[in-house]
Length: 168
Image (cartoon, rainbow, N blue to C red; front, side, top):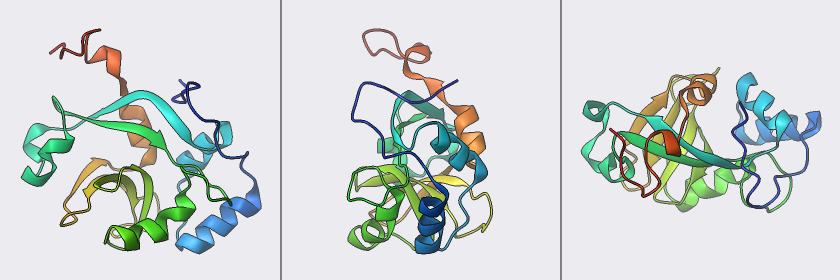
């Protein structure tokens, strides 16, 4: 199952070993193999309406606005690039400072107010994937690791009808 959408901008240039090594050095992390495997298929970009189910009792009050009908939307997965293109995890240090986010995150998707990120604060290898908000840094674990995040994706049309109504 490919998660990539072909409807938007082209992805970053194809992945190569030195690009990965430079990104890991810059971010001081070892990127998950499952993430790198996905980027080998396409180096980041928009994904087809992928939703991640979250138990409603696990959602902190400050994050409820980012959860709809028990799902968090992940609209893209940042690739690795050596340019100033949007959708590049090498911009993570800038965004962490700009939005006063904690260190040891690698930002995969977000709009400034909330982010989906690899969270290296608690694991150096195969970290959990979290939803984190900029105001206050409240976070919610979406998956125990990147591979589990990919496995948990469900499509928008399996949750909502053509009019956007929840299918329950």
